[in-house]
Length: 275
Ligand SMILES: C[S@@+](CC[C@H](N)C(=O)[O-])C[C@H]1O[C@@H](n2cnc3c(N)ncnc32)[C@H](O)[C@@H]1O
Image (cartoon, rainbow, N blue to C red; front, top):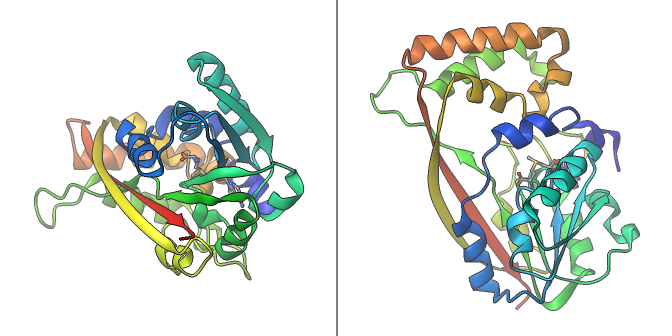
């Protein structure tokens, strides 16, 4: 594990559970239907975070092995799994770079939900090629890509306020740009599309579907959401955290005095198979 992957989401786990949206059921029902999941499969959830995909996936397979480099994320996952009483989940500390060494056994599918962009993707797919059974699949869930409701052209939206405040409080050099030598850049600026990376791997036969959904926010949930981003966790902002939060609250209310915000979300699912 590199120091970078271990510390990226340090301090974000509690905020993550509270402010990041769970995926809609259609995402996992869609994966299960396309892969014929019938409760007998073994799944890997790589970059599982606090189990956002792990827990719903566990309802469709015999076992999910949930791997993440961040111990606080795994602790939240264990806690939530205990509360929801889902099927069998094994939580493992590790990351994509050391997969072969974890001794995880064979899988029918590997899911990477909102995590593939943090990995050296070709190397990860190569490692997965050694772990996934011949008829198995790799599933990349792009996470919850936030669109912005722009009802009135040129009128600033809450997302514009977030961008402006981030630019004021997060020095450019600290905004996540990824490691030199890896293909990670930022969560929004991965150079090659996931689909192309899959297409060039052993899991080159790619099908996809998307689920469009949305959620409503108030000021505090939009502020909390920022606390889940690696470059604006309370730890990353440190002494600037309070100023950042206050500035964002003020900007959001200026844009929408009602304090009610809509976040349209698009979740794309890519399923890569060998043949
Ligand atoms: C944005 S969160 C996604 C969590 C969850 N899968 C979800 O869908 O909400 C990304 C997660 O990937 C993990 N991560 C970062 N680099 C990783 C790597 N190289 N291998 C595995 N996981 C990694 C982080 O610790 C974090 O928990």
